[in-house]
Image 1: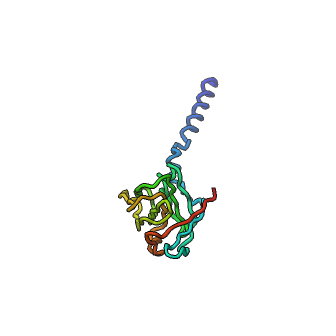
Image 2: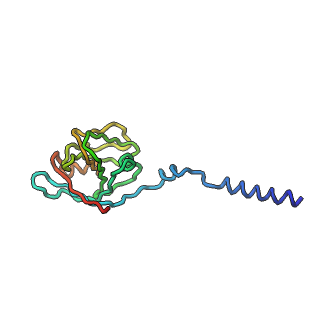
Image 3: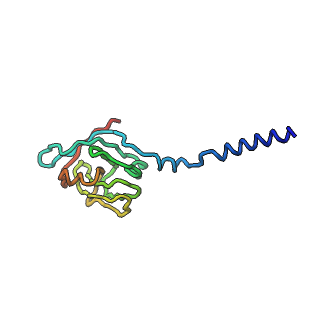
Length: 165
C-alpha cells in the first residue's frame, strides 16, 4: 500500500503545482504592464523667423523598425514637456495612425532639414484613420494633443535635438 500511495502523493503534488502556475503569456503581461517614458535626449522647437525657442522637451527616440511601429502605443500618459521623436533613414511621405494609442496626440512631420512640413492636430486615441504628412518627411515628433496650437507651431518652424546615446 505504501508503495502505491507515495507515488500517488508525489504525482498529485506535481499536478497541483503545475495547475497553479501562471499561464499568462509574456505578450499578455507586457500589455498590462505600464510602459513609462525613458529620456533619451532633449529637443528644442524654434521659431522660423528668429530662431527663438518655442519649447524644450525631453524626448524618447524611435529609430528602429520595432520602435517606429510601436511608438507611443499602450502608454497611459505623456508629460507636457515630453515627446517621442521618430528618426527615419530617408525622406518620404509618411502616415501615422493611432491604433492602440491611448493618448490624444499632435503629430508633427519634419523634413531632412528638421523644418516642420505638416502637422496633424488632435489625433484621437485608438483611431486607425490614416494621418498623412502633406510633404516628404524624415522626422516625426509626437506630443500631447493641443500643444502644437498652444505653441503656435507653423510650417517652417524647426527643431534641434541631441541624444544621450
